[in-house]
Amino acid sequence: MNTVNTVEASKITLSELMLPSHSNFSGKIHGGYLLSLMDQIAFASASKYSGCYCVTASVDTVDFLNPVEIGELVTLKASVNFVGNTSMVVGIRIVSENIQTGIIKHCNSSYFTMVAKNEEGKSVKVPRLLLSSLEEVRRFYDTINRIEHKKKYKELEMSFDYHSKDALNNLKNYNVEISEKLLNI
Image 1 (cartoon, rainbow, N blue to C red):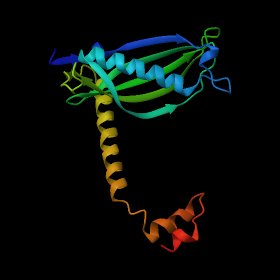
Image 2: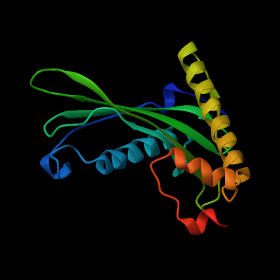
Image 3: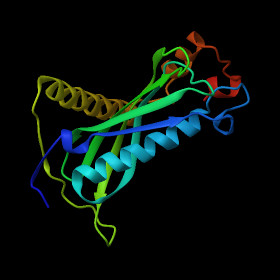
Image 4: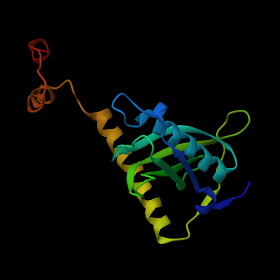
């Protein structure tokens, strides 16, 4: 296995024409179908980069920005943005093109964390990432920042006392009703 690999080695592009069978009840392409395509391209990108079978560990920041219409050509682009010891973060961008008008719109961005596995299903070390452009450096740092933010959020979540009177009283600022039973705890 290579001990160093490039972002370029992980790049994958996938295009697919959106069919009526991919739509939801409102006639737009179902978000779940797009997530399935994203999972496929994340697997391909991570596997190509690492040379190993890869599994999805988490999906972060799935932003559905614009709906995708039936008949549009959807193109997904993916590359490894960050590597840890056994994991890789794959950035994915989806655009759709109206093939009659040529209008292209950015529809979705997402980040999938993939883990490399061996034949026994054990996590294995992935190659170090060779950064070759300032854009690749930016994406690497953006991922570091997302990871740190996620850790801080988890720490806050673990330490927050949602049982306290202050926490319960604070909920009055939101679109909820608090039962008297809870307020008298």
